[in-house]
Image (cartoon, rainbow, N blue to C red; front, side):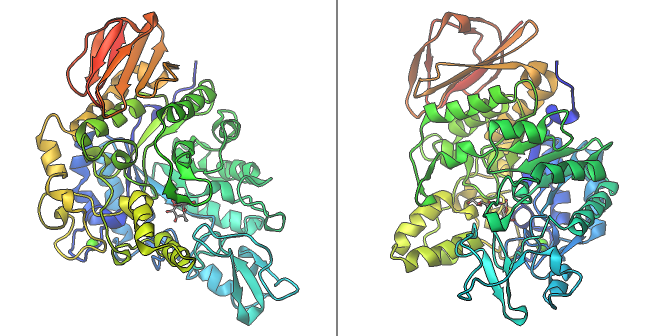
Length: 545
Ligand code: TEU
Ligand code: CA
């Protein structure tokens, strides 16, 4: 009984421009490189590309520090390359979603340069400035997500400015209506150019109230989003997705409820953060816990079953590789990559694939901090080794969770640097490109790639995948992931062994029966009996009418 939108049955593919495809041998991925790969993406069957930032930037945070919202970084190409990408993608039925990074700009943005000129500059209030504390120190103890204080002293004007990320990413002041108007104007400029929507970077931070030390979920957050919707998105049939680390099931309904006029959907990160240590965060991992993982997914499936909409993802450019984090990249790399895809793509919501996930790319085995490039990783290395952690211990954590795991070059071939560049890549390719690469995956019918291709196609032909009611089974089972999706007279049953051990499963009566096999990792299953034997990481889905 849900209003239907094109993005309900769409699959999104995220491109991290710097690491996707280098067309000119400078070692940096670029827009012409993306255009060369559109046929590959068309074969995969995706509907939307979310492009991480491509705008003019000093690249302190690989483009999440924007110096000019309305131009393209020269290393990525030109505006006319971009227009060509939009047109070429459109010709293949693919829309382009841009990354909207408006919690902060680069310190090289014109607005910030003006703001630094003095307290009476008209752009001063575009940013968040505060006087020093009485002792001359920082205004308060707000911390940067990249380590250290969120306040940086600007000596010439005698005030501190706020940066929740790097000091080269000053936060915009959303309380200033001129900031909001400028952002709206810029969004309309891109929308008029024919893009299919926006992924909104840390959008839950824009309502911050720094004096109250509130950063996420500020009191005016939803006013700003409704205002933005009215001024830019209303009347346009686009996909919007907010990056919201703070979202709860109830606030998700505020962001994505159909009568709210805010966003299509948001990203929730509970399955990510449940694996982080309470004290050391992502730099120290907790072991996998399937019961807890299933509980998170079930909770979100239920919370947004009548209103709102889920986004479904295992990875992105900030997170480790899906198969390394949630699967078994050593003993069952292919089987576990496929099964992770099965269980995610058959849930209700819009699936997101991070580049390389569709061929089962893994984390990197870097051995030295010199091989890392990410600002967060480098900052944390300095801070944590200063306080006594050994470099080896830090690298162990980084190999599991550094953002650079996701940022090594896309592995196109078994050749030098995985065929990403003819030059020297800005970050080393994973040596396993000799076996894990797109060329080999496309050629092999039983590859991870073709499993993803089938799942994406099934979403297009089966409404039960898009709209079916979700119910989970065997919630307490430590190895099995079992759920059903029901719509009208149809029922889809999804069964997965999420472990590297064989599994013999006793199933409830409701699950037992015959049907049409829709997808499988090992062999097509046409009937589910009372008991079932599954190989390590085997999964399948059966449709009953
Ligand atoms: O990420 C927001 C964010 O909070 C992450 O930095 C996160 O804390 C971290 O990666 C997890 O360890 C967004 C972008 O996705 C990220 O790439 C940017 O660096 C950040 O915002 C600033 O724009
Ligand atoms: Ca290049």
